Image (cartoon, rainbow, N blue to C red; front, side, top):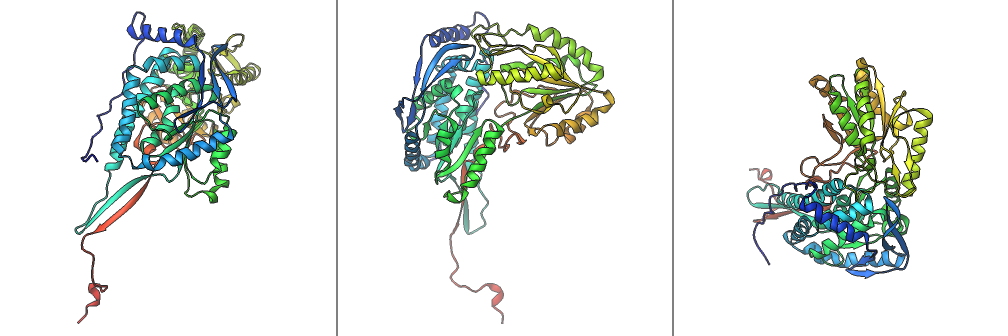
Length: 541
């Protein structure tokens, strides 16, 4: 048994590679893309370390070329789901009793492997399977996931070091126990780092997991599973179950040993899961911890004092990076009348310059949306824009080869228009122009228009206006940006999460999230217990 007070390596944010023409990292990534495009990967379920090929398969295709098959994934059957639960519970005791330093060492090794030999492997699968540019893949798949693992290791040490005071004659301690049961991790398609962090963060704190990744993100999720195994993750700690939501979820949520849900996805799905857990609440051995990050209708509000060029660039980047498929993407904008013409000119001029196409072509700024379902949904919103609003630029869909939606700017005359209220999750941003003297009123409108409260931004050079926005919009965004786009939260710098319809705000990328995956036990030890039941006040003469 190792003894000592161990300190994790001091975490620093992973530098972002530039992928400039002629750079070594660009050549390495291009070679990996060519390799990955020429193979079809077979993705199994992983239960207790065993590969299970169920024969119930689904094709994983490129969003930018929906005729190109990247992988064949085997979906979990009810028998496999039950087997995964049993394996997780069997692995629980040994994993929970492993010293915390040994657990985090696995993920620190995974971070180093990803930083070096695995970097372009995961970047390439994210680019191909999720249609991210090299820049977006690098930020997500490499940098953010490395940061999650390195910073979470440090946060784990921080949490375990937080101990109570002790008076003379006693010793008080907190035992940070893993949850009693297993964690169910349901992960989204849009961020590889989030998908892999959701099962690995609870695992770092000693928990075992059932992991159901999105079927449209299975290629990079599978690579993440392989990476964690290479880093030394023991069998059964994270069980990998591709599958449809109900096929896996109905069985998992009914199991008495469910101890927690770690979720990122749609608000509707999260509410359904919460309702199901509530219905089953009397059947569980412990009350499950529920952590979820869901939708957003994220805003940019410009005060008349703001710099119009800066606002326009924030709209372009915030709305159109990764085709707007970020929970934090700018989706509604409030602009003063005095600024509108200048901003409009920039948007009309620059948005059409944003090349759209296969992300293997490094000159493209946008790729395709994730699948046909998303494509059809966005086509419907484009039609609404054409019918009920003014399309400033873009407005077309192209689905012949890939699922492409043009970067689209829409202007509405009603701040409560459905395009200002509903989550679209695509490259469509809606603008409402207000009278300059109505800034205070527009803050109240922005606060009340949407059920979400994930991210938002205020642009102003007037400090009183900034302070007013901070106060009025205090509950409108869990991540609030001043003179910056509402996207791009960095682990260790801007802990991420929102409230209202956007989730439980448990702040991924901070110690607050890891605290959800432990159940503290207070231990009081008295060194010299009393030998008489009488207290001093009873000893009257």
